[in-house]
Length: 299
Figure: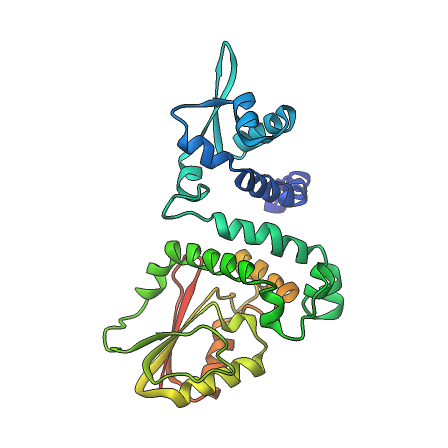
């Protein structure tokens, strides 16, 4: 029997089909404050108590809690009085607002912004451009204006990025020996218009994937001009495999760039070409085995 015949095709299809249901259950549980309430409580709580504290229906909350048990986000204990729920370690670490490793803001950004854009994925594939205008009724001519429809949303987005960096930042910073660089500049803001100060090393963390090749070239050339001799640029991105086999996370992120921005995820070779065309040399690529990878180019 071949390996393909051993696969449970219907089960795989059902798993993919239900993917967005899983996401929305997690998003909703975070948004309602279930994980925060259970963290603060002195012990497990019943669905009735949780519903009363959070102002929801008992029937809706009970089903939500049970689904979270199935997803290993909650644990349940059956007592004579009924079912009592508590957080798993995963939820305490990553889904409560007060945890140093909290991903709450990132999940809320996905729920309130990314999820709505993906409703128009078919249109994005047809049009080849982002779907902010369809999703939110705002012009996407100015990408910054589309991404940050309000100061509040911009702050939430930045909180989300910071949350991910708190988990993955150490891996990419340790990918290369950065000790020779004494003045390091973490690039942010409207870097196409604002001047870039002189530095030994520029960090571009999840920036180039937002932009088409011509914009990436424009930015890298501007950085190369400002960079001190012997300095460099460190790119932090999720790299695609050269043979198009994955990783799946990078492929999904690349689709997200289609519906949300102007860019895409790229292979090491594609980033090497962009850096070389901008004047950078001695280009090194380091796959961390985690969410983000690192590319270092020298002037």
